Image (cartoon, rainbow, N blue to C red):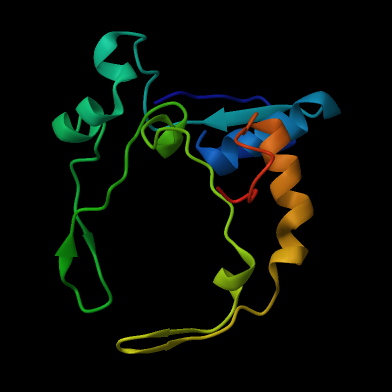
Length: 144
């Protein structure tokens, strides 16, 4: 157990997409920030550079069971490492399309329309894409 008697303005739990983004945004503010991470840093070796190997070998997959609302166990696809699940999802950041926010008819019923539209999220998509250096073919659909 680490005993830390320091005072922090912000404590961030996890360095995945949410925690890492929050830390990056807060870092220049001068606030005292503590970041807690359950996992360790991945070594920069070949087995950690090939996502297929990471998934097949489940190198960082959490060996635990969670339980659904009916008490049935399942194994989540959770990976504990610095960077969280962002380290094993191939850094694929995709935009949803306008139509994804509409009601969608499926074989088993209708998925309801979202309470907001694509246009409401577009400025945030653009900021995130700039932060994460997302790139693609700007001559086509920005969601491709």
